[in-house]
Length: 455
Image 1 (cartoon, rainbow, N blue to C red):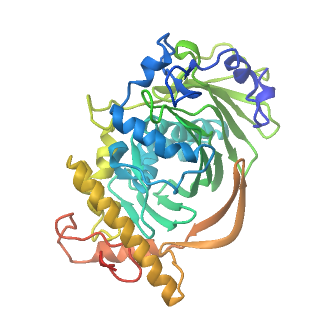
Image 2 (image 1 turned 180 degrees about the vertical axis):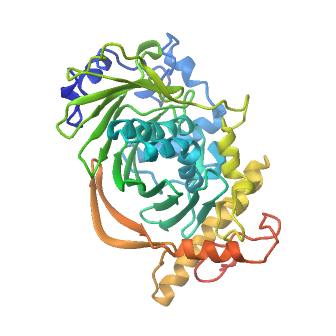
Image 3 (image 1 turned 120 degrees about the horizontal axis):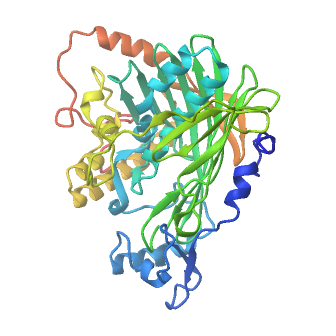
């Protein structure tokens, strides 16, 4: 029964066939004039009427109705960078910072790098990639990075992390992370489809991980994500579909199926699948919940657990702060703090954004005005570039001529150019003792001077 899943296609195999017996509890708001056909999905699968669920969520009645009227025209469209959103739905973090949250459980990569068993390496690395989904379930939207914006992180598992917004249209981010055990590189471009009260998010991206000890290179294809009840009802996130992690060196791979949320929450958070060898024979089964833990057990060629073996936990989510306003983990707070900032932090760093900081301080009005100012500065710099006949050139990543196919479209690849490593080595040797803070350093991602508001 296991071999059916080994191909990594769209079917999902055995675990998918189980999940197909469920369907999400959906209802339509047909009784409200002007909202006919609007889909509201109760994440708990209860029996509440859709009109009751529709009144829940973070939006006030007038705001919700007004926003729905303004968004109706975008149904069916990719709204990645098309729509200006209110800070009401934002969290005080940018997408570049959110990319760094994957680093929280980096000890799993140390275990993978030191492991001699090629199949257990895949167990550790697949669990690492799954671990970030606990953070990704937050329903607050991160700020879109400004072109040229960066995020740096140190002081965690010996990792040096750098991310940069390398393109604005289309929005593309690139990141590089490294320590003594691994090298991680990603080019990330998101594609969306707005469906009225939900949005499908397709992760166009190339993610590669190198384990240094044996030079093993792994490539990830994650599942898509669906954000439900954007405007009406309680917003919640699901990622039904397959995650495929392939060892490009040997051909071994992991195929994991993220179960869709079904009736009364059945299947929500559940992840099941197998580690396969290059002949697509199952070697280890994996199971768990992406918001709790993952476990593994050796299996036979039919995918059944081997006799005298036990299910063993490989990863467990860390305890999170209670009643945190933005559902942040302890690590998310570290990502946002200057405690993980390196010496001589770049002025283009996300931590220094005045809109992000204002929201962190609870000043919604100031966050909104600062966001508008930054967006206008970005437009002004674009006009300056065009007047000069120049193009934006990323600082820490180079655009290549590689085009990588993904299940959701082609992707232009940016590669780490190594210049940040030299910059960081020189900065670390510096005798400067002044710490960069929001109080003494102005956010400045601009390549053509710090654009004035009036430009």
